[in-house]
Length: 87
Image 1 (cartoon, helix red, strand yellow):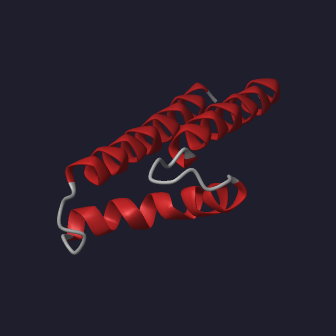
Image 2 (cartoon, one colour; image 1 turned 60 degrees about the vertical axis):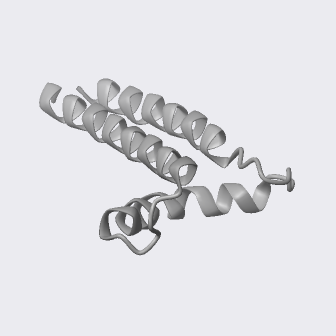
């Protein structure tokens, strides 16, 4: 069971790093057609798009990644607590 808990933690951390890479890519204005940039958007948009729809428009600042990090941490905590209770 410890291996599963470790894997779950790793996957949440990996997704957080992918989200950070997406944020940095948006700041630097990389080529949106580059395969790596497209992969970052494909992996993060399913989480960010619904959050973006719920948040009010704030001009050029996108707060959806901040909310996404909070959602990720809460989801991680819930999943880990469930796994620990099953162990």
